Amino acid sequence: MDTAVGPDALDAYLLRIGALRPGAPDVDALRALHLGHLRHVPFENLSIHLGEEIVLAERPLLDKIVDARRGGFCYELNGAFATLLRGLGYEVELLAARVFGPDGLGIPYDHLVLRVDLPTGPWLADVGFGRNSHLPLRLDSRADQEDPGGVFRIEETPDGDLDVLRDGTPQYRIEQRPRVLTDFEAGCWWHRTSPRSHFVRSLVCSRLTETGRVTLSGRSLVTTGLGAARDARELAEGEVLAAYRTYFGITLDREPVVAG
Image 1 (tube, rainbow, N blue to C red):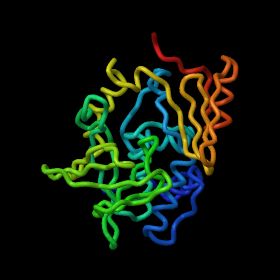
Image 2: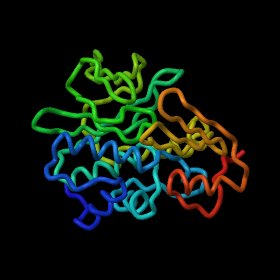
Image 3: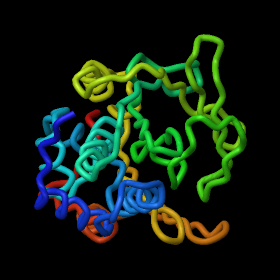
Image 4: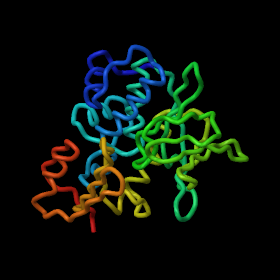
């Protein structure tokens, strides 16, 4: 697939995620890119509550994530990451997934993940699921895969899909048919407009850190460190914009607020 990313744009993206240009598109470089993305680009749904348009196309995604130094949710983060990987010489396919929730599986095109094919086999890359594996997972392995984010397992379903489990709990179900970014527009529209969407009902901005995770949900700031260390506090109105800048590098001119 053609990509709109030229050498300068690739360098800007790599700088954004604190990564060096790999010498070859191999698994070690994929791991470094994946981890760098999680640590530098937050999972966030602020656009929904700021009235910003979300456009699922290469250039708008790069404008937002690289140039504007923002984050996004799965369609944006994994969509942009696919563009970066292709520009670096990786073979990437977009796959649709449905997230497991209290009432079962979510809507079709609920989630977007990436299949990255290397000579050693296929890998699952996902930088758009919040709390998930820190590193890519072997897509063709059915054994437990230990990761800093937990113990993961990929299981086949009777219908030929793949379930991803974290510490024994199903996270999402992947369809193996390749998709294109525009296939996810209906799912993206649902997540940013439906009153049943948790993205519409709540605010989240979260990223991995070298020692844990930092999350700002509305005005609740939670940081986790090594082991079980956890700090949670409610921010005052005047502290919120500064917290977005300090912890996520996001500069906003007004505080996003969930509509009542």
